[in-house]
Length: 109
Image 1 (cartoon, helix red, strand yellow):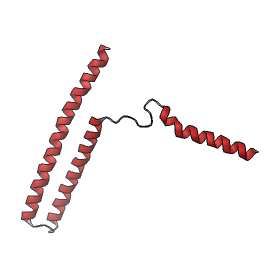
Image 2 (cartoon, rainbow, N blue to C red):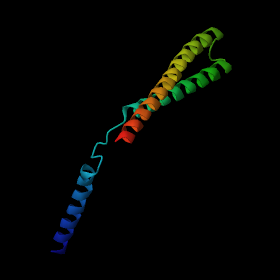
Image 3 (cartoon, rainbow, N blue to C red):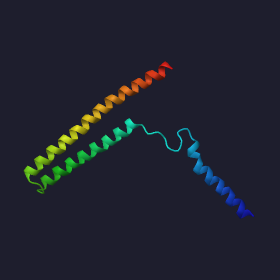
């Protein structure tokens, strides 16, 4: 009999644990801010570009790459990195403008 009561108590606790996220304010699947997700992706891409440039420099310095290959690859990576940084700056400006508009709307009512 006591084993049966423990099974029921544990079952109820398990159900509460599983169902609780569905009834919280943000629900089981909180809404992801698309702008923030985009910024995180661009920041990750920027870090990967920096890492690739550092690896490329290291390979050239160790003699694994010819100067011609190094210059071509470095130019391509620099262009890609510049595009990512430019997009980050553009998105940051847009994000600030969006935040200002949200603030104005909240302030109005």
